[in-house]
Length: 379
Ligand SMILES: [Zn+2]
Image: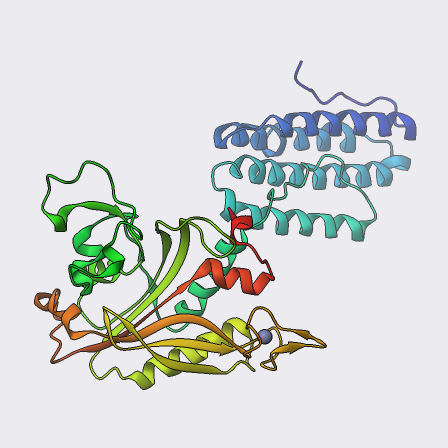
């Protein structure tokens, strides 16, 4: 039976309290049943409609008819009821919206509920009709959290996020990135190939991408320079799992292309990013290296943020930096003109544009940041 507002004849405190408590219990009960927008509107109108809503009836039946000596107390009760109805209507709306838009709504729910709770704390009352507070279950995975942090550092520098398929063709994973046909990374020892591709020409054969770099080519095919992108994603290698290797891991890669981009831009950008990630006191250090798709190439080290670069932690040797005071973080370099040749038609004439690229393993950085000593613990 739906709740109806009774006409009050007995205005004793006990009778008034009982009537209020019956009304609030019906309110809480109905609020808890609201499942969607249309039910919510019905609920809101039933309780708050100016004409004949429950509140309007309470006003008419309880307040207007109250004897003079209890009018003040009845007025306070009606005000309390009004507040509770408003809270319940707002709360019911937030509650049915949550399953539809999980992340976007959870924050607004918490802040709104906190706000309501504050209001009640100030008024010295507890609102038992409020829906319970839903908290998101669990926490972000340390690798995903690390990836978000890295991506956000580059987004603040004006980079946008690009993504691409995990199952790639040989062309995007190797050929267009200037891997000569006999490069060791093409060896089956390193790459996981999709079965049954032998009938296709080599460049069309499918494999699990071994790095996020194919997305550089895919993005340059779609967008003209200037370009600034950061590419997070999953990659696979045919590595047996141990404390520092996993057949599946995550990379974050960056690419900047424009006229007159120099190695100085590369160093300045990465130095800033490392300070943003590991603290303003870290130093960076570049050593020459080789990658097929960059020329010149470098490995970048940051001063060990665990021992402060001393190589020791008190009497103990610092293991993460192997007592050197430096930790290798990423590979980088100036985009090889041979790579631009593959996307020349889209405005990437190597005579006119230059660029830099860098890539880092997100899992390894998460291991360092959170002091975890086995990558298998992340899976
Ligand atoms: Zn160290």
